Length: 317
Image 1 (cartoon, rainbow, N blue to C red):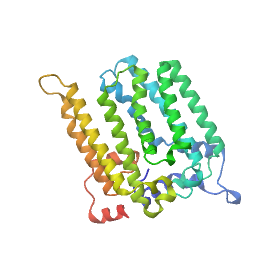
Image 2 (cartoon, rainbow, N blue to C red):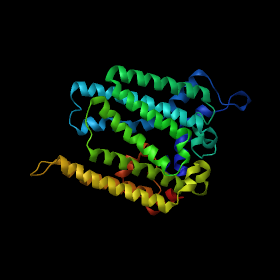
Image 3 (spheres, one colour):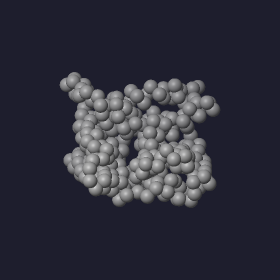
């Protein structure tokens, strides 16, 4: 995920220069502590914030603070984070060659040679098995089943589906949707049809936004860094993003009014306003050349004042 190539490059470089410093013979240092730090970076702690979606189902149902539900949600959150980390390791292990041609991804520990590919895959297997076992033992087979589906989607995407236009975006969006399904499975909360539509198309909106940010930020080098970007005209990505935003907002409105009493006003209806603001603001950030990496401060930018003309030119190029 990128903002602009220069901005993201500066951020990524700062965290990995110590790890990628060459040792004797010009090879990256691979002491136990360095490899451990590399593994920690490779599972992308910044992106764990996405897993908060696991909490969405019990929170929207109003049962999150019940002790038993809270405990099950915590187990689901930890288990899903482990599965997501396994997915990142498998994906990066398979993308070593492409990542080394990318202006920022080349600093990832596996691409940089800090973490051996074999070790990354072994760690992914351990994390996945532990998550499935703990989830089934503590919360039941429903949680293990949802985690298994997520792992299947992730690994299939990493090895095959990421090279198929449109389908690859749908698979990434499905990964976000499965976060909410996992929370519901662990706590036995029933998801409404409108909630699923909001989560699904909202996820697609974010994924298309990421592709748009990559295509505009990398310019002519986009296809070299991510081959599938050559399949997407910018107008198509923009139209798909707008369609996803429209479906998300309409479904959210229907969900909010469905939960409201037959007569009178509810706070859920009022939440339509910040939802609308968030969708529009994120679209604006993308058009400015920002917002491609929600985990890298996009939430702060959502409420930041508009940049001056000089900043706008800088972030576009």
